[in-house]
Image (cartoon, rainbow, N blue to C red; front, side, top):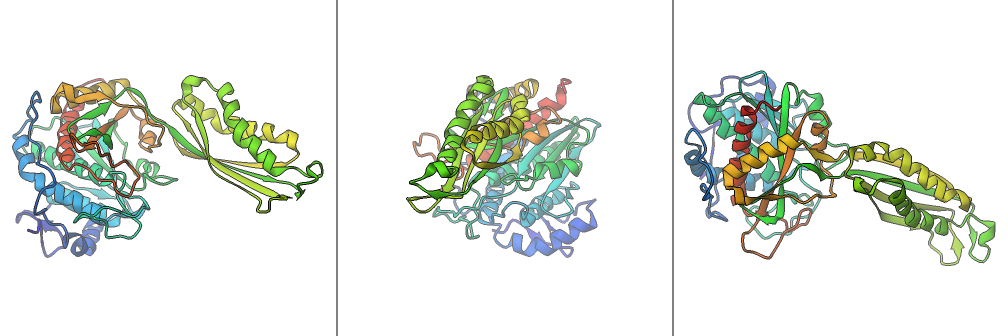
Length: 454
């Protein structure tokens, strides 16, 4: 059964009601993409998992939203499967953004698309103080290895990090809160931020911030899929959550020569080995261990012949840090250490230190708000302490400007020992996580609006 019909102006509507306010640019974008997006957006014939109702110990949602969510469960699963089957790489999320904007417009909201058409910002309700929620739209450059009806139809592009789930949960949040707004039960203003390009550097968060995503925002929240937790559980923590992730490029050059006469050359292989071994060790003596700094090399190359000392060598690696303070001083420190290590060898060295993303540091009060909301949404026993990850997340750019928190959404199949990890071609989720995610975020929105801490 198709979820939508197409009206004369290119917008799909579930009823004769049309959105009251929508920009001309958005109308054009939706009109151009409507046919492509709608053709495969169908409800699943068989749900992968039973759509979750309120769990024991959970508090009901206001405004009959429990009933509303139950009736829209298959629709949200269909949206997730459509996005999963039609992934778009970073900065090319045009159809995904159009789909999100259309669903919000049909609900009577006024989404605003980025000028490039690959991101969406949408406010719900009224008030000077805004609570924001962010989802990311892009997919990874990986082949989808699953054998499922919603397998990626795009070669070498797949939603292997769960951004299709993030987008669907936040869309469900927006549609649910619009129900409350219509009933006059939304006590403030919520902003949905659907961001492009989380998976690349430079990433999309600064672009959304420059477009006004954080204007009047008092706090911001996000979630991330976590297959190590079963669906129905969430992980929350205050303080460091993910690490800063930078890259380092090192190039060594020298005259080269015969391996029989290394004293007449700058022995680049030896010098490169010193950089690879000594720099991480020295960092461990120059940076407080509590900063959580990790330097790991991922690519090394120098020479071809076994008996010739090469004239050039390269090493590339990552620097990951949990401390904001240590991250701010890392470029100068790492660069100088590498130069100091190389100096006695006589090789010439060039160091390129490239910023990636800052560390995600969850605000104490924001983490407490979402922990309490998750307990209300799922039951207190289903909220666990999240592990720290050394992976990077550009949600950190928002947290550098306003308080907020990210949580981990359990996506694993309950009772199963098989874990489809992130950034792997077979990654998939227990789709009941969508319903749990929406419930948690609705409770979070209402709790954050009610607190005066932000």
